[in-house]
Image 1 (cartoon, helix red, strand yellow):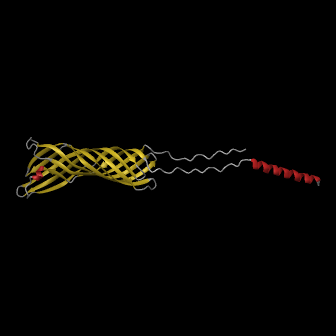
Image 2 (tube, helix red, strand yellow):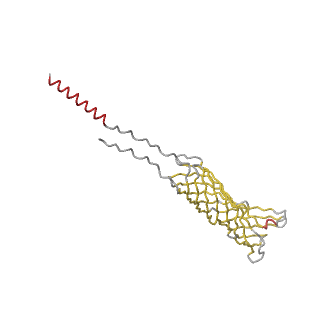
Amino acid sequence: MRSVKFILAAGAASLMSTAVFAADMAIAPPPQMYAPPPVEDFGGWYLRGDIGMTNTNLKSLHSDLYGTLPATAVVQRNGQGFASGVSYGVGVGYQFNNWFRADITGEYRGKVKFSGSDFITYNPGGFQSNTFDGGYKSWVGLVNAYVDLGTWWCVTPFVGAGVGFANVTTTGIMDTSLANGAPGTYFADGASKTNLAWAAHAGLAYKVNNNFTVELAYRYLNMGTAVHGVGRSYDGTNAGQSSFQYRDLTSQDVRLGVRWNLDAAPAYAPPPPPLIRKG
C-alpha cells in the first residue's frame, strides 16, 4: 500500500513540473500574412517593330489629257490599281495606364507596281486607248494613340488613330497609246511629294510576358496625292505636255508587330515564412 502511494505522488510531482516548464516557454507567433502589393496603373516606355502587307488603292489616275477632252468624249478606266507590297516599321511609345498608350512610328513602304488602261471614245473623232505602267514607294511617320479594351486570357483588343506625314516617291509612268490605229508612247519622270497622312487602327495584342507583347492589327492609311515630273513622247515631242497624278492614295494594311516593355516590374513573389526554432 505504501508503494502505491509513492508511485502516485511521484507521478503528480512529474506532471506539475512539466506544466511549469511549459508555462515558462515562449509561444511562437503565427506566421505573418503577406498581401501582394497593389497593381500600379501604368506600364512605362516600350519599343516596337512591325512588318506588314500593303494594299494600295487610289481614287483616280489623273492626266492633263482628261482636262482637254471635248465634252462629247467618253472615258472608260479599266483595271487601274496597285499590286500588294511590304512595309517595315519601328517606333517608341509609352503606356500611360492599363487602357491608354501612345507611340511614334516610322516605316518604309516598298515599291508597288501600278498598271491599268483607259479607253477614250471621241464623238466624232474615233477612239484612243492608253495602257499605263508605273509605281511608287514611300516613307511614313505617325504619332499614334491607342485605347486598350480589356484583357481576356492574355488577349487585349484595341483601337487607335494616328496622324503624321507621308513622303511618296513615284517611279515614273509609261503611257502606251493607240489613237485611231496610230501607236505612241509617252513617259513621265518620277517625283516626290510630302503630304499629311492619317491612320485608323484595330487589332489584338497577346501579352507573352511582362516584357513582350505580340500584335496582329489592321490599319487604314491615307497618304494624299502622288505626283509625277516632266513627261515627253518617245520621239522627244510633247515635252511637259501631260502631268500624271495618283489621287487620294489609301492603303488597307495587315500588320504583325511586337512590343518590348522597357519598364516592366518583376513578377511579385511573397517572402518566405519566418523560421521557427525548437527549444
